[in-house]
Image (cartoon, rainbow, N blue to C red; front, side, top):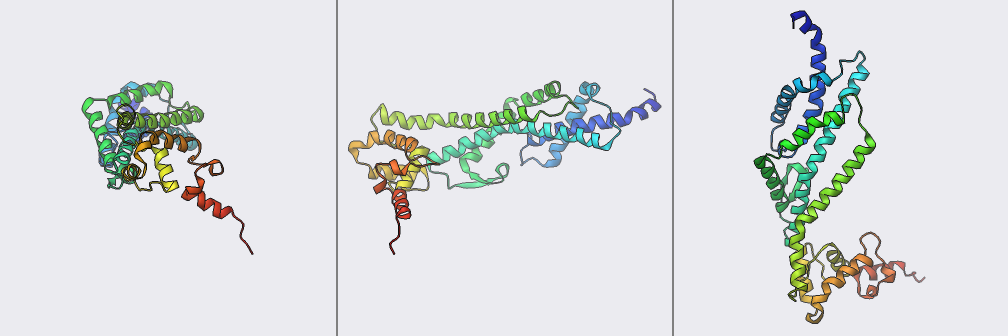
Length: 292
């Protein structure tokens, strides 16, 4: 390529590099392991530039030339940014699942009040949640799994080519499905610890009560065993529930919370224990007419 040809092709080359940096840079800023808040932004940006230099010879020919209008130029760059953020957010949900699993683990052990700064969550997080997040980063970097989303990014140009636009409907559906899968993964990671309590209660006859969300809600609403965390509620339940019914109390409380004392719409009018329930008594007083 002569000097004149290089000067002629330079605007298109720069434009294509900017388009590539918009998508790849957004992904790198959010990617688990590589896009953590502990890594300075300039290092992450440098990593994005390095990836652009590596991938440019492979992808440049499929990119459009620089448009004449400023509006079309901004549209192309903005679309690439949105696609990059979308790809990065999908990958970020994997580490978010580990964070949620750590928070559930802290709730189960009564460690939910032990908080540490967590830049990724934008505030404070339970100590086990932060530990699970860092453990996910170590596993991601140590096992080489970070190459999977990078390979998917390269192959993503065939699925969402530059200039083809972003399909908002399917993209939103994929994001919603990924959020649901992250919650499911968090519950699957925590399931063995909750299952252990249930097995001790049912199979071996141990007097344990595995406090889940239903039991935690019912215990605090009714005043049976109010507490700030799972461990406090479990200790109070074991103290207040008679030994003769302690083994079955776990299932009864879960069923009561699932079908009667529901989270959003508690069925206080149909509740057989509303007369002894703190919430039921308060609602009865509110609904009672005042005498004049």
